[in-house]
Image 1 (tube, rainbow, N blue to C red):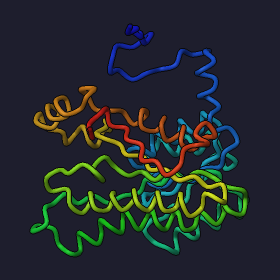
Image 2: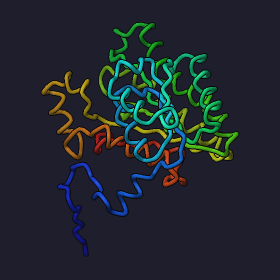
Image 3: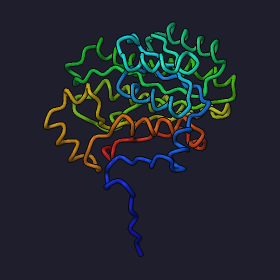
Image 4: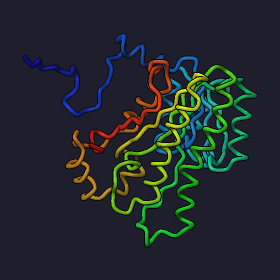
Length: 278
């Protein structure tokens, strides 16, 4: 006999929201309490959503991006609100080894520990093989795969010294779903997937977990401005839930993977795509 399950407060396919004041909401609000987390690509689409969410959940954040903080007033306001004890921003290129090392050194100097890394930096050039130059190919790999490699390379030693941690590398559904013209980006994200799984295997004995987050299509102001009717129709038809996701829906999964709630989860590729990859 089948039972019919009802989701209170949401129609099927809509984003789930916890009720304010509920036990579930209280646990979500404190999910990252006491965690020191490094966020790269912090001023990008996912980063700008993750920062206020993680701060509200109790994390201390070290945020880095190639873009100056002053160019994103909302993030500057958060930095002013929380102060240096909870929110540190360092302008740095995640694909430059010296700059990544400098951020890691500052994390260790200032906080003495690192509990989590949420590595979001990427470069996307969407062209087929015969149109893609070597320079574009190398730039895509450097901005997407090399950046993840470098951040992990300098985060892991701090985690080893302080008893472990959790790495979340942002990959993409396009790392294992083939879309026309998505050559460099798809190859780079597939590399991020394998990088993540090998790190999980190699450093499990040190209490380090590593997982990759694979977003599908999600709504962000920069993307909405470029969307065509064809794109919207394609997402509606090819995604089981019939819609794009939101940055918050993706970052809620990242928060789970960074938290102790996911203590038995490692080497996983977490698709957050509404069923697009099936």
